[in-house]
Length: 156
Image (tube, rainbow, N blue to C red):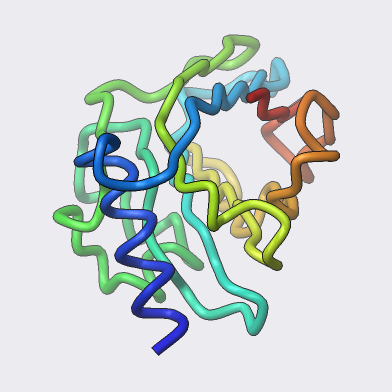
């Protein structure tokens, strides 16, 4: 039930902000100069037990590459209907993705984690490239990724 409520809070905050307590949150991911094609990124949230709660955003428009976002794909079965935004473009090496979304207040300081899976054509996939707890104290703190993401931060 808790997971269902969190999913509803996440979904409601993104689609009907006036009906839920939500705040604008800017997510910023800067990529390394890894020398390859653009990166596909899936941003999603898990609960305290690591169970998938919902997808926030996806960068990259060719669905044939989604299976390479392995943790996200395993959690969703590749269902893009669960993604609230798809940019239609991958993010080039050395570039920055910056998006602002309304996220439910219930996601902060309650044990939820924001994850980024990354994949680049003809290069190694990077599931769980970034995993950062959603806390109010963590806002503005930059964290490194494992392979393709040089830094990630969220600001409220």
